Length: 332
Image (cartoon, rainbow, N blue to C red; front, side):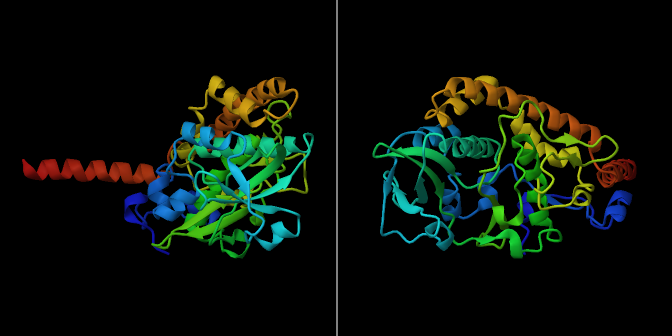
C-alpha cells in the first residue's frame, strides 16, 4: 500500500505510546481525510463520488425531479437485478449510472432518511455513495449511484491495515449521530486509487433512525464504548479496542465538519429530502432537532473519553522544542 507523504500527519514511529502497547494499535501516522479531492486523487473517482461538486451544487443537481432517465438496457449489479432494480443515467451527465426501484409514498420515507445521511456525509467530507428518493416521469423511485470498480470491505483486513481502520474509526462519528446500527462490512465498498490508496465508501443507509428522540445510542460511562438498543446489529465493523489509540485531534477531522452544520442549513436539507412526504415540514423539524442534539452529545462523549493528543504526540512536541533550544544554544 502506498501511503502518500503529502497526506500524513507524522508521529515518530519509534516512539512507544503505553496506550498503543496495551491496545495493540499503532498511534503512528494518519492521512488528512479532510482534503477529500486530494485523497481520492484520480479524476474519475473524484467525479464518481461527486467530489468535484460543491454542496449547494449537489443539492441543486440531485434534489429535483427527472434528473434521471430509465435505461432498461443498462447492465447493473446482480444483487440489484434480482431485487427488481433498473438502471438509470443522469440526463446532464450520462456517465453517472444509478440503480432505481419504484416505491410507494409510505415506503419512500426510509430511503429519504438515508438521503439526508448521504448529504450530511458529503457536507462533512465523508465518502459515501449517493442515495435518494426522486421522481421519474411522475413516479417515485429510490435511487443509489452505482460505484464502479469497487469491492466489498468484507474480504479486506480492515482491522490491521491502518488506512482502512482510520477511515472506519472516523466513520463511527457519522453512524452514531445517524443511529445507523447496520454497519457490517457488507455496507462498505473499497475503491483503489491509481497510487494504491484504499478508499472506504459507505453504502446503504436503509436502517438509520433519525426520528428517535435525542441520542438513541448512549456512550458507556466507565470507558469508551456504546450501549445499543438493537443488540443484534452493528454500529461499526471495528471493535472498541481499535479506537483507543486515537485522540481528539484525529476525530476533529470529522467533528470540526459537523460543527459547521447549522439549524437553517439542516432544516432546508431535511425539507428537500422529505419533500414527497405529506408531513414533510413536521418531519424535517423533528429530524433537524434530533441530529443537532446528537452532534452535541457524540462530540461531548468523545471529548470526555479521548485525550486532546496522544502521549506520543506530546512526547514528540517536547522533543522538538528541546531540539530547537539545543540548536539556539549551540549557535550562541
